[in-house]
Length: 177
Ligand SMILES: CC(C)(COP(=O)(O)OP(=O)(O)OC[C@H]1O[C@@H](n2cnc3c(N)ncnc32)[C@H](O)[C@@H]1OP(=O)(O)O)[C@@H](O)C(=O)NCCC(=O)NCCS
Image: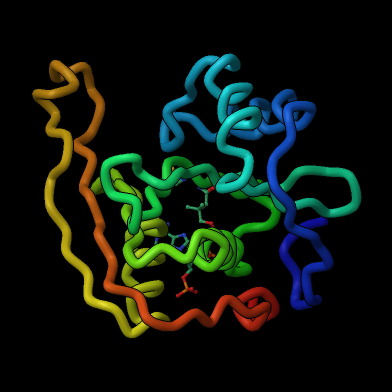
């Protein structure tokens, strides 16, 4: 189903091991913004971090995946690792909604995530989430090009949002397209 003015009829649930096949296809279709890792990594995520990782489905089809975890060193912080939305379902607020849900689920006080400088959509979304939550944000280079041994990987800019005091993870972001 392509983008339309209709409200998106979807559901969100925690990722399962048997989702990995489909999630991997979604990720593969969206390189280089999502730095595809081994299937094994995603199996581990689904086994050990399913409580902080989400998929969105239309019918039985996975249309989005959002991974992340509570940092063992910063238990008040949810780190968003990868978010991918199928190209036919973009611009409907799904990335923001998934991140807000993950924040609400974890009760985190801070949201962290890295964005490549060329990924304007993600950057915009992190700033918008800070605004929605009336929270401060900071940005700084977390991993430089040199850290990636100048192999063509862009730097990873860390966005840190918080402290977060309120949640407004509602479907109102979904039907605006
Ligand atoms: C980045 C991504 C997850 C966004 O998902 P999404 O569900 O479409 O995001 P949302 O609908 O919540 O918001 C998109 C916002 O970015 C804007 N946007 C989309 N493409 C844009 C672009 N190329 N330049 C600037 N803004 C853009 C939209 O207008 C929207 O802004 P708005 O809320 O002010 O209207 C999706 O585009 C994607 O999967 N991209 C490939 C993978 C990726 O980059 N993942 C993130 C890094 S891990």
